[in-house]
Length: 88
Image 1 (cartoon, rainbow, N blue to C red):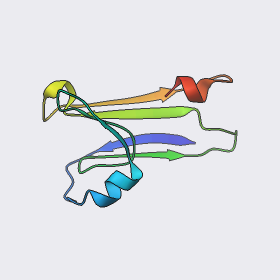
Image 2 (cartoon, rainbow, N blue to C red):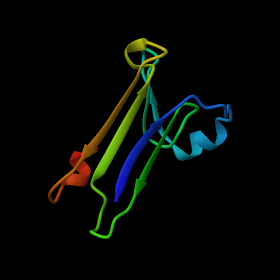
Image 3 (cartoon, rainbow, N blue to C red):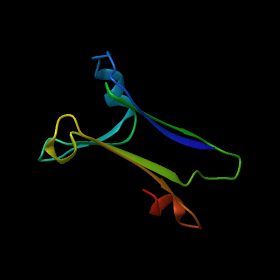
């Protein structure tokens, strides 16, 4: 299995596909928090392995700390019977 985040300068300005596929939250300081999906600059992907439920999770904060050029990326590896919930 694999979990990954790609950050690059994209050119697609279409929001329709991104909004449909993403889990997105906006914050008061202008940050955009994603737990899946993609944007103009970021894409996330998970590949399901053969061992059962995937316990990995990830998040990307665009405009982190209110800074337009700051991105925070985190990948969380869950373990144990509740690992899939704890990693989220």
